[in-house]
Image (cartoon, rainbow, N blue to C red; front, side):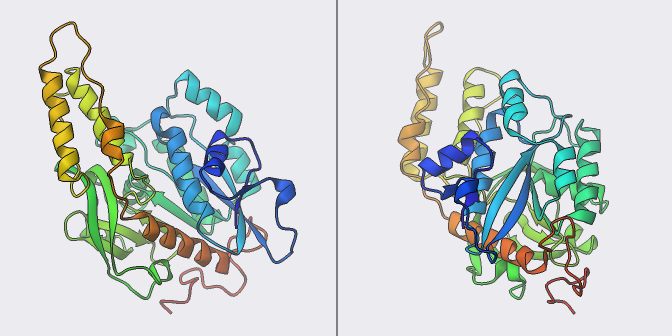
Length: 356
């Protein structure tokens, strides 16, 4: 079923133009058997990635489940500094945490964020994020945490701080399903790709020491998918299955342009298992041309379009399936009144009935 456009958020219009089914409230299904599901999106991404992150998660939600209609409620934290353009976008299209808390949610997604240091507890959003996580734990059926949000919860709730890695873990990596009985990985490939982009890591040993259930991991980059002990209330992503085909290229472009201006000590390494040999050669040629640009002249334009047209996406179908399974699992145990997250008779320590 589609996403319901209950406001005029530009991301909804862009997704509709790209083929995602978006309907107006007046067009929504009237059958009493079609459930409305209300999904919060706590978007903590920086200004440049704010709207792209909206579209990535909205797209996955809209493609995920044939038995419900989705109302997505974006909000953010006031403690995150914003420029004028992003602040205006948020003021016009986003709800406040107070509004979301009052209305209630069936599920919540918390994105990653850019940080200034290694100790997350010193970030300005730490207190407000902790408050949102505490509220979600007691009032939302299931919360999906992406990358830095996963690291924050492992630190804040489980006392397992992330560790800085010697090199950035980024690229597209093969993962294996470790717990095939869990509904989140039902009917998905037992081995599949996931993009990663991070300097820090929470190890499998740390997840397990916290009593969490590791469902999917990679020999190269560690845990991708895990859940809280009950299997549903908290769902942890350490990778970025929501990424578009060109997301890693845009990250490379950002850092490469900074390096070209002398604002980084060197060009970033290419993302692993992502760029074909021909596209790496194009980028190496661009770097050579930049280095040979005479002083006072503009450097050559970054060849984004030339590289992007030959990139492959080897993760989206599985990401869509996992999000669909997440929505289906939530649907099983959520009250029609979204302020009552668990149905009578459901065991809160095993709401899906897989560990009893």
